[in-house]
Amino acid sequence: MKIGLIGLGKMGFNLALNMRDNNHTVIAYNRSSAKTKRAEKQGIIGAYSIQELIKKLNPPRSVWLMISAGPAVDEVIATLSPLLDKGDLIIDGGNSHYRDTIKRYRKLKEISLDFCDIGTSGGISGARGGVCMMIGAEPKV
Ligand SMILES: NC(=O)c1ccc[n+]([C@@H]2O[C@H](COP(=O)([O-])OP(=O)(O)OC[C@H]3O[C@@H](n4cnc5c(N)ncnc54)[C@H](OP(=O)(O)O)[C@@H]3O)[C@@H](O)[C@H]2O)c1
Image (cartoon, rainbow, N blue to C red; front, top):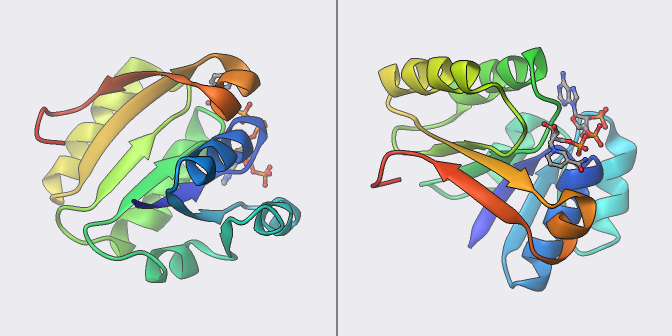
């Protein structure tokens, strides 16, 4: 599948390589562009803004956030969500507090966006070679 990834830090970069190796097309954006350039050298399609990332995806879009837990997730969702269409999916792969996750789910549901939290375990080597994913979402998602 084609998937958008925001965040190419330790986890995001390795997840991108893992997805690439499993024949998914990864389009990735990182706040600081040097990490996007590094990913492009590894066969990841780079985007240099969240707007560009969204343009490179086809609906229904799936956008995976792999960024620092906390306010950063709300900031990115605030930029991202107006660019998405009904039925698009935002995935939070970071270690967000579950109460924040529930609030985000409810807020996004009001604007008909799907939301899924995928807490990831296994650290960097797991992200690269075989991550453990704890998925929370509505069954249809
Ligand atoms: N490291 C692990 O072993 C591990 C294991 C399981 C889960 N996790 C979870 O996975 C998530 C990512 O962890 P990590 O280790 O990959 O972190 P990291 O290497 O510190 O990378 C953090 C990423 O978040 C981005 N970011 C931070 N604040 C941002 C903001 N306000 N707007 C946009 N982007 C922002 C950073 O962009 P810049 O490059 O521009 O700073 C970077 O891409 C966290 O929730 C962490 O708890 C980590």
